[in-house]
Length: 142
Image 1: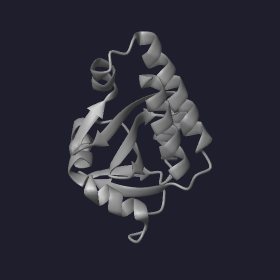
Image 2: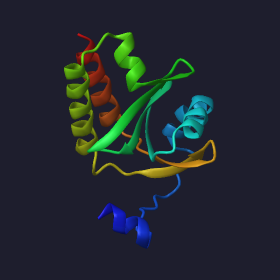
Image 3: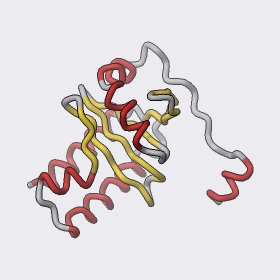
């Protein structure tokens, strides 16, 4: 159905993220690396704001996607994360499966839109998804 959606314009338009939303304060903190990511990546981006950081699903989650982590003023992609922590292909595969499941758990969470770096992004202000992603990444490292 995705291909037909592109032809017929059935892209979901989410309402703008309200200015007073707590997620907007977090996004303002990381707007420079978020804009940098927007310029580097042509894929669809879905941002999960966290305290002083964010997780970004790239592509088409939960099936075909990548993930980036914005923290300490920089962007760490999955490849860099895996290299830094010496993850095997099997561990990376398990990480991706679990992240896809976490994304699906948040399927009913309200989504919004915001623009960074000239690119429209989907914003998922979900404490539960944030915590689940943190837990998955922590479990992967231990």
